[in-house]
Length: 213
Image (cartoon, rainbow, N blue to C red; front, side, top):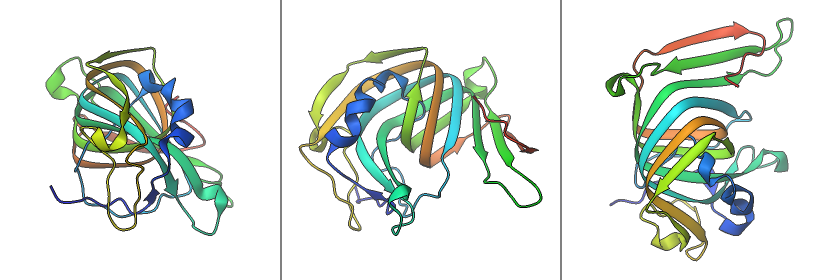
């Protein structure tokens, strides 16, 4: 497999970022997988929120990272937990991002919704989906074939390498064969995907602050 690139991320020792997220492992919302997408980017100055009623995923792994925005600003450096599913199914997904205050206008919120159905074929599906998560919550999580404390280099979906990205091969990692997540809420800085299918997609720009949670 060719090495993939996510140029906006600088990998650090996992312990720095993972300590708070170990307790939040059961709260992983939307996730990412190995070798998914060739991409190079730096993150914007805004995080976004995602809510979902239920997420089913396979091929999960997790390790730590630091996302970079403006290299001249320390405030634009964001420790994140990078999570991985080779594929995922998402029921009733809502994603929202609030714009900064606009002169003579105020704030506005972009809200995207999809997959609000009890039928699996009408729910959101994702393959090789990357997400850099800052905060995660879930009402309940069930992990199958869980391994905690795996060296990052030995994960089935190990950290990506290339274009100056660095990972600690002995850094802390964890993985699971299957994950079921209920009542998911998360704040993230970046998402990329190989494929992302959104049945019943709707997108609205609303004046004011109207986040998904």
